[in-house]
Amino acid sequence: MTRALDDAVELLDRSLAYARITLADVAPTHLDRSTPCTAWTLRALLAHMEDALDAFTEAAAGVVGVGGVDPPPPTSTRVDALREKACALLAAWTRAAAAPAGCSHPGPVAVGDAGLGGPLLVAAAALEITVHAWDVGQATGTRGQLPEDLARGLLAVAGVVVDPADRGVRFAPVRPVADDATYAAQLLAFVGRDLAGPPSALSGEPGARGRVPS
Image (cartoon, rainbow, N blue to C red; front, top):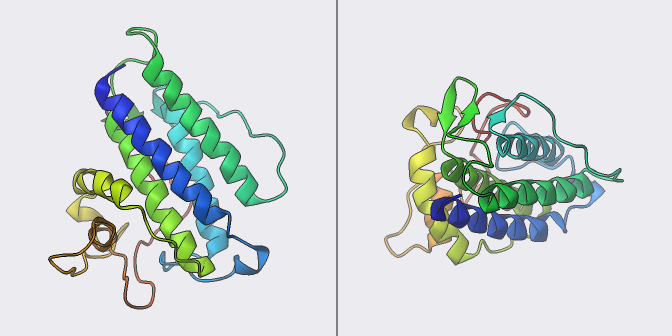
């Protein structure tokens, strides 16, 4: 479709690669642990991530919340389901990006009563997936490093999609960060993650539709 959508899909691909690494460390004994999403255990966070992947995959057809997503093959765990849905998400938007003009859904994606351009929505998906993948790593204790090139690409996205009205609802306030902080530290501080202390960040309920998930 456009160079902007191609770039957003590439960012999404890198976010999913990072998520696969953190999800590989999830064990059944971790599921009741707390996460940086203060209202959620890891079990609840994984459920939210699955719902978000469904919503972003639906969006490739032009609308979130209407129509269905083909179910993934049967899996034995939620992590397996997340892997399958991540593949479906990337495939859906790769097809959308490759479609000739006029052969894919036109205009912005309908998200509830709002409309978001495809590139912005895909970039928002990359942000969502990356931040929650980091949350998963905090919950499992692996605390893997967020790639600098990925964090750098997502910083500009976060500045667009995180509205001040979201603070205290979907995101905690911006946290202080050193002038020479890495891109990863800057991104995590912007979305309210506490790198130095106990988890205190995003709040909300899994499964919310009609807006970009968080």
